[in-house]
Amino acid sequence: MASYYVALIVVSLAILGAAVLPRVFADKPISLPIIYLASGAVLFFVAGVDVPHPVARPEVTERLTELVVIIALMGAGLKLDRPFDWGAWSSTWRLLAITMPLSIAGTALLGWWVLGAHVATAILMGAVIAPTDPVLAADVQTGPPAEGTDEEIDPEEQEGTIRFALTSEAGLNDGLAFPFTNLAIALAGAASLAAGEWLRDWVLVDVLYKIIVGVIAGYVVGRLIARFVFGEPASTRLAVVMEGSEALAATLFAYGATELVHGYGFIAVFVTALVLRHYEWEHGYYEHLHDFAVMTERLLMAGILVLFGGTLVNGLLDPLTLPMVGVGLLILFVVRPVAGMVGLLGHSAHWAERLVIATFGIRGIGSFYYLAHALNEATFKEQELIVAAEELWALLGFIVATSTVVHGIAASPVMEWLDERRA
Image (cartoon, rainbow, N blue to C red; front, side, top):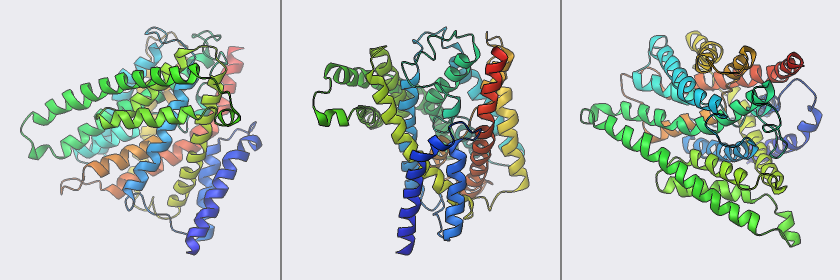
């Protein structure tokens, strides 16, 4: 019983921190996720309360991380003021079509070659680690909607290019990592399937059907919610108090409806947010929608990062080996930057902009979701698989913790340097 009350205190401190810390560290070169992570480690270490290992509570881990990611996707979509255009979004397509597959391939190669993982497990590692996180990348994303961040700044200038590219990439690649995760699941059980059958099902269902359904469902839900939001202005005190809550309703409805018809809910939520944002360009209500989504996301993020900090001091990293540390550092500081630079070759952005976009592919809570989801959907326990679930969590925990600290500290100075360089 005592541990329950301690947990309540920890959660209350996380919520209080989410509300107060942004004011305290507004002008400091340190990100809030670092504070939450360190606070969780200290609180749980001092209290002596064990945090359940993600392997022991896979369903809870999947659902908690799923919720914060879909809300973050709604916030990311609402931030994008740039009109949808194939040319204007060229950096996004490059990051999705070139950088992401290269990151998955590079990570899988390291897992197979250095760690001796089975092919299915190596691909799973790549799919889990490749997406740029929409939750922890707030420091390098665009500002709130209707601020003109993307429309008034020339797309060729640094802040507009970098922030737009990383925000749009984080919004879409979380959904596009699903086909590769499902590929790993299919490969893990391929021995029991007819030759070629699993590949055909993967292409037709996991790649084509689920992506198309996600896009269509997101568009339909976005149009419906937009008509409701902008067609019925708040006229009562209660309605004014609840302003912005439609963002949460749209998130849950788009995700739930799409998943019911076996589409990719992550893609649907982000498309819903984009449709909402494009419905009325200069309406002031977008601020309420964005702020409500961000507030909800920040509260959930604070809780999850505090718990993550607790797992770090309660054995999550125990299976970590020196080769795994080396692989984790290579993934963060070699694989992603190189893949990013290759993807942006020939882009009009300056080399400094391209380097920042390539380097700041922050790994975070989205990766937690993908690993929990994959291990819940299929058991990677065949005898030939060398890397077990505990080792996968240890490697991922190390990568996310390192990314949170390094990218969190570097984000503000790097962006300030780019601003000075541009001036």
